[in-house]
Length: 278
Picture 1 (tube, one colour):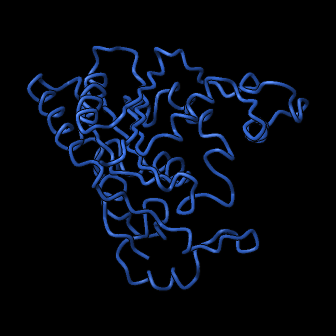
Picture 2 (cartoon, helix red, strand yellow):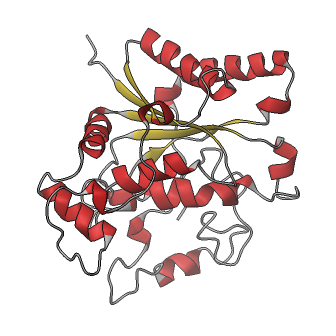
């Protein structure tokens, strides 16, 4: 018998009658139907604190006169002195093979309460270190997916649309946060403007999500530039290796949304899986 899979669903919406709630419920139902154990962190219902402050640390601070959250939280994590709410989320992350973030896009990003979860739960040492980041990241055996709603239709997020390319908006979160911690980042599930969609279109969106969830575990993750293409040293400045740049000179596109090398961004780099390139 296959081992039970654990899923953490981090949910950030104020209403249980929202489309986001319906997407959450669909994921729970389908994944539980597969035999998964699904844990939901309902951030608003939990009253999860969004601010990363010294209140997250129990006991004396290392440097109270010049507080540095990252260093203090890492030391507290090592000494088991973080507050119970953070430790509870840490345990959920440890146990999960898949994390789903379900949220409405706010100002091209996540709601403040979800940003607070990221700031407080992805603690230095627990989630990343200078030695363990990106393709060598701590969570490289875990999958993650962003599932979110937008207020605007898809046409507004195209490269020619008024909002600009959605791939650019997704890069900081998917690469700078999730891939930075080593996660295998699955292509995002984007629900385009459900609030302005008729009921039948909303139902179709949820049906498409359910269908995708049925085979989500087998999906190919997004492709990111691996760390072995860089000089990963302070003396080398963590720069792309010269031979890699040379090999890419004749290519029509850059390596990724962030590593564009002054070329056009590879189409759909942050929204669809593609074979890795060097």
